[in-house]
Image 1 (tube, rainbow, N blue to C red):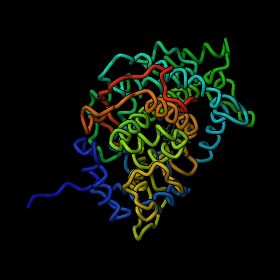
Image 2: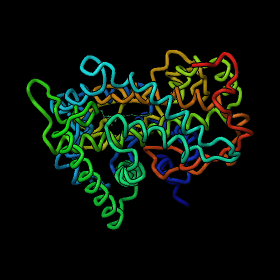
Image 3: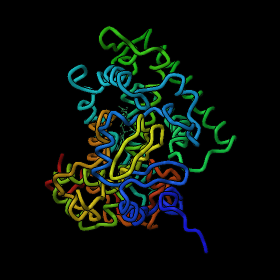
Image 4: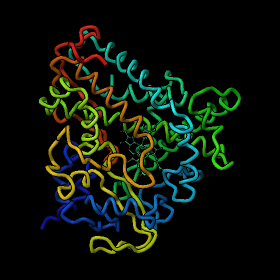
Length: 419
Ligand code: HEM
């Protein structure tokens, strides 16, 4: 008899990247399922929320009983950022960095970017005027978050392509423990990218120490919490984390948004007429097509959940994308409902590692999608489904070709839609 591939392996398979959701329906049938390699996969809303708020769950893979199959980064292992730390180190380091992300320490920093995000968005769309076929990932969904994170950090935008290549290489390490282990050549490529990105950030931080300005990197080298600062190595790694987290995810939120609008023309029309709907629409996107589909953790002790005992040291994968479509939590969970309220999705996680870039990502997506519906006349998908990037964790199209009748000039916008 032919052996069937376990559901979670099928989810990891790039062949299922375009539409993993039917597999997630099946996976939710067993809230906590044990995989052949000893990983526990959690796929329901209640259990995901419980575990993400449980102090017995660790973000530090050094707590694994067996080393992860997907090799840990030696660079980040030497000086971890708070992303892979547990309390108290997590809370301490996160507090230092969060000071740079808005009130009370830097009240204007994120909100103050609104006008710039608006201007960059308009410039990117202006550059497409006169074209009838456009790759919305390459020209827009990727360009906007990269420009914004460069500006926020104080990194020259001229280096955007280089930064993107490094960051793509670094995130290729992110996928879950049960994914195929990387080859030596792949590992070498990642290690090289990490060290080049680290050298790059190190030089910029050294410059900001000598010549501080009002950018985030300057803040990072000077920020302190209870008299304590980040070490030089931590500051470098935090700058790398922000660069990577700041654009590898938001690009997918914007691309998924455009894709979802084109698959639901009635939603696109509604948003065009009622731009205020974009606030709840972006939340629904984060639920329905989350840019971060899963995260992995480690059990610090034996944990009983949903009738399963997860043993100490076991890898635990939290399938955020599955939890977000759990019918037990969300009515009509498989439907895209732009005005959905009571929408506490896990798009930005929950608990102590909740994404603190969320306010920035929301502003970027709301502005990008508002301008897309305003200025693109009769847009349609050239290929559906589009090709996807390989990652199962950071899921999004690698290319999004659209045909458009016309890209409007700003002055031609329909009445009543002025910002
Ligand atoms: C749509 C865009 C984004 C999504 C979907 C997203 C999602 C997430 C998720 C799921 C986590 C939890 C990771 C974990 O603990 O395993 C996270 C953490 C984080 N995100 Fe985001 N993120 C986005 C944008 C951003 C941006 C723009 C920034 C910064 C500029 C950012 C910075 C961070 C940081 C620093 C953490 C670590 C928080 C901690 O460990 O305490 N993110 N994000």
